Amino acid sequence: MIPNHLSATWPSLAPALGNHLWQSTVFVIAAGLLTLVLRENHARVRYWLWLAASVKFLIPFSLLVAVANYLPGSRGTAGTNAAFYVAVEQVGLPFSPPTMPVIPQVAASTALTQLLPALLAVVWLCGFLVVMFHWYFRWRRISAAIRKAVPLQEGREVQTLRRLERTGGMRKATEMLLSRTSLEPGVFGITRPVLLWPEGISERLEDAHLEAILAHELWHVRRRDNLAAAIHMVVEAIFWFYPVVWWMGARLLEERERACDEEVLESGNDRQVYAESILKICEFCIASPLACVSGVTGAELKKRVAYIMTKNLSHKLDFSRKLLLSIAGLLAVAVPIAFGLAKPTKSQAESQSQDALPPVPLFESASIKPNTGEPMAGFTIVGKPFKAIMWKGDRLMATNFTLHGLIRLAYAVQDDQISGGPDWLNSEGFDVDAKIGKSTIDEMQQHRRVYGVSGRTLMFQQLLSDRFKLSFHHETRDLPVYALVAAANGPRVQPAKPGDTYPDGLKCIGGRPCGSRSFLEPENNKVVGQGVPLSNLVELLSEKLGGRIVLDKTGLAGDYDFTLQLAPEEDEAAISKALEEQLGLKLEPQKAPTEVLVIDHAEKP
Image (cartoon, rainbow, N blue to C red):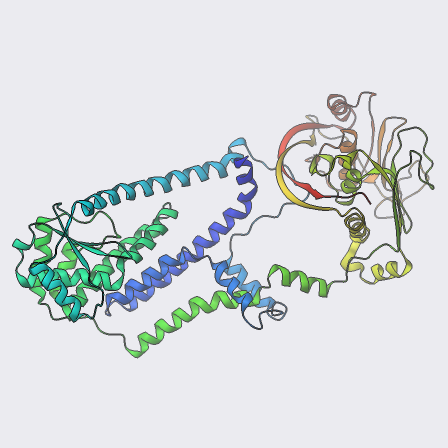
């Protein structure tokens, strides 16, 4: 059940994922270019740029587009901005889901292809669980250290910490815990952060070293670095297969520690003392195992110490760089919203489509009654059981047709493509007599380019919807089908030629044969085609095979004449044998993803 569902949703899910990754990668590239421009400025600016790029992986482009639908004036803009919308859609959505016809061609797919969505889902889930369990076990290690730690209420560490909090204007005191583990000093927790302080480290630190380390940790608390790191860990867990997110994680850690280093130095701490304090911590402690536990030894240590000792204090943002960031932020939000303004929502598109196109024409009069056991007036049928349907000028007539059969004809599907519905769907016959009014005919002729040859089909479908209260939805399922292919010795059907005279006396005078038609002769068990494409043969074969889907895989285009004399037995083997011997064609049983009409509701008229 789940593999089938994944297989059905994969054609729309895969392009959506591809578009999301493509758009998020562009966002990462833009953030990277901005960090290059701002490499001489404060690290906290670059850090927030990388964090914004990380968060973008959790916010689909379509979500920002949807915001436009709630803005004033968003309705009705699709028509005026159609060209802009098409251009943006081509750039923003390079991966488009394929469209599935009602009777699709047999896909050249193997069993592995059918199972591919499920296999990919299993691989992703396994990777997700590996990442989560890896972090969980590291988290348990830190949690165990927290549980065994004891609160530190006094001493020069607590005094220095409280003084730095007052100097920094922090209203809430940070709890300090003394741990016997060798973990580095670090801030643990998001909503109620605590400072884990390793036992014995204070004796190795002078007052200046102690103050520098505590100042660094307090900056992690003030900046809420643990929350930002946790957000990126979610991104890494979901998109573990995408190397870009892991590369961004390294950039975030590097800029996070550099930002805290800059804040410590700008607060007046000596460079050499600060660098010595970091080295002393590294001699005594090991680094925190989780990015969401902010310590003091993160990032590449050698490069970081060199930066502390040699780099001048970073420049503040000047007006031009502030303007650049403002424009970049505005574009990041405005472009998808503008795209949403240019693209109508589904309801808007339907409304605009209804405004632009005339409504589906209706029959002037229509009667649908249960069949009484006799042919409806207008039909002359010998033998029982009987059923027939025909268009007679401006009149649709059907006798003893089930709703199942009416749906099959109205929507050009086969029996296997209709599922669900009430018990009487394929058992109770109905007589249908519907007439098109003259005004409707005139309207259809006036809008013939809109309706085309499907005008009567639309009326037929609307009639079923109105009188039977018919509603359904589409699903894609793997169904058994027959593929009509050329036999080993090649096809032997006769191409139709202008000038052919058919048995009914009609003669072509040019172009498509005037007498072109196809029909069954039940009394002779014969299938006849006169100047018709092989798709007509496919339809007739489908009827002879009990409504089984038959797909034309012959590759033969154009119109043909054919006569297929069938044996009294109408099973697959007999029909396939007759096809091969008389027409040089054969039937191959296959399975293919096929769109199915699932009946949700139907009532007797």
